[in-house]
Figure 1 (tube, one colour):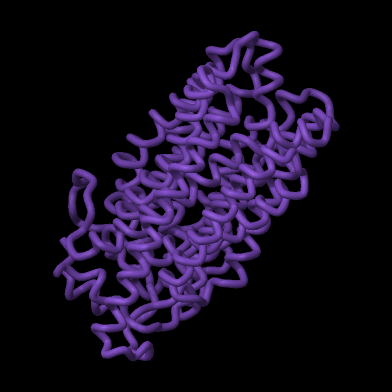
Figure 2: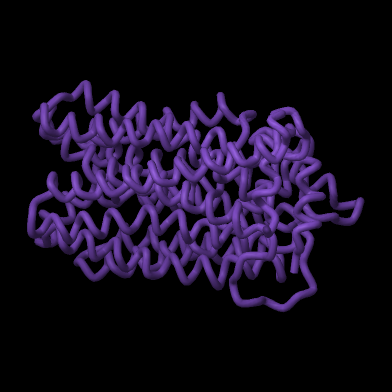
Length: 444
C-alpha cells in the first residue's frame, strides 16, 4: 500500500509508468501504442453513445415510452459500475492487454446486439453488455495511455485521455445521427461501422507487446490507496458534477433543437450535441499546461453559467442561447474534467494505477447516470422541462459548494507556502510544477 511519502516524492517529477525492462521500454512508450490506446478509448465511448439519437426510432418501432428509455440506461449503469470496480483493476495484476482484449470483444458483442435488435429486450441486453465492456476497459486503457506516452517528460497523457473521453461521447451521437438520417438501414449501419473500428483496435492491441509492469499482489478489494484520499475526493467530486451537467445537456439539447428548429433531422440534433464536446476537446488542448486545481475552479464556474443559459434558452425559446450555453458548457467541461483527470494521474501509485482510475470512473459515470435516471423518472410525473430545471438547480448548488471548497484549499495552500505561489512540488496538467497544494494530498 502506498504511503504519503511516496506520493510526495512522485509529485516532484512528471507522472511516469512503472519501471519495465530496458528492452521493452521503447515498446511501452511507442507513438503507435500511445495513440492506439487513445483511439481505442475514443471508439469504445463512441459505441456506447451511438444509440442516443436513435431512441426515438426505437420508440416508434418497438412501441415503448420515455420510461423504458430510462430503464434501458439504468441497466447499463447497473452493469458498468461493478465492472469498473472488480474487473478493470485486474489489469494491475495480470496485464493491461489481458483485460482490454476481452472488453473490446464484449463491446463488439454489444454493438452486434443493437444491430440485430428486433424488440425492446434486445436493447436491454445490448446495454448490459456495453456496460460490462466499458467498465472493464476504462481503467486499463487510460493506464495504457499514461504508460505508453512517448515523451515521459511531456505530461500530455492526461490531456489526451480526457480528449479521447469527451471526443468519444460526442462522436457517438453524431455518427449515429448522421448515418441514420442520410444513409439506409438507420438502426444497423452505425453499429456495423463501430464493429469494424473495434475489430481493428482489437487486432492492433493484440499485435503490440503488453510491457506494462504487473504487481505481485493478488487482485484486491477495490479501495483508495493511503495518502491520496483528499485528492481523490475533490477530483472525483469535480468529475461527478462535470458529467452530471453534461448529462443534463445531453438529455435536453436534442429535444430543444428539434423544437426550436422545427426539424426532426437526426444529424442536426447530433451536431448540436457535438458542439459541446468539440469545444471541450479544444479547451483541453489549449489549457492542458495549467494547474489542475485552477482548471477545476474555472471549469466549475463556467458549468454553473451554462446551466443558467440552458434554462434561459428553454424559457425564451432561443436557439442562440442554446448554442451559447453549449459552448460555455463545453469550455467548462473541458477545463474541469482535464483538471480532475490530471490530478488523479498525478497521485495514483504506479502499481495501482488502473485500480485508482477505475474508482475515479465509478464516480464519473455515476455523475453521468444519476441525472439521466432522475430526470427520466421525474419527467413522467412533472414533465421534462421542470425535471431538468430541478436537476440543473441541484447540480449548480453542488458545483458552487465544491467551488468554495477548492478556493478554500487554494487559500490554505498559499498560507502554508508563506504567500508565495512559486514553491515547486506540484504538477500542472502539462507536467510542469506549480505552487503547492501538495499538503492537500497528504494525510493531516
